[in-house]
Image (cartoon, rainbow over all chains, first blue to last red; front, side, top):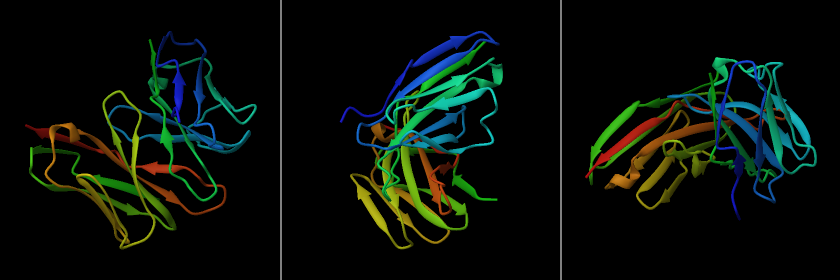
Length: 114
Length: 112
């Protein structure tokens, strides 16, 4: 069990640029989640997938955000036309599903928008 | 509106000084309550899941308990390495809902 991995760990970008983050979940987990965390706050839910199906999206997920999990394995989160307010830690988590909702988090991607 | 409130916001303890962290929730249809530990710059690390009032779970110096309105994370004889932010989160019933709703966390500092 190698745990949840995320890439990159840090990303600095200029306002208006597009960025893409990748998440590789624990191999046997069929549920994958994206959260966003800002300083002094708990993680806030963005979206989640069961296998390749995106089942829920938060109102926080504006039209500039899109997430995919094309083969039910890894997932990508893209932010288009980044804004300074997008600066945050983006966390990915996975769970087994099947009534077990313990979510295991990756190390996160720290995004800084200048 | 569903809410998760953690208190205190920050707690400073002397090594060996036991204490409790509180997580209160006002939600309908609790499916589970989760505790996580988070070190600076890292993702949350899973500690416990509690499903029903009266349930308790232990791991080393930590014990989590659950009532119908709140959960406590008891820390017995803490060590400096227990310093971290402790997050609680709730999983609610309903539809395809699988998300966790987190509190803001409690920052624990244990002095040697």
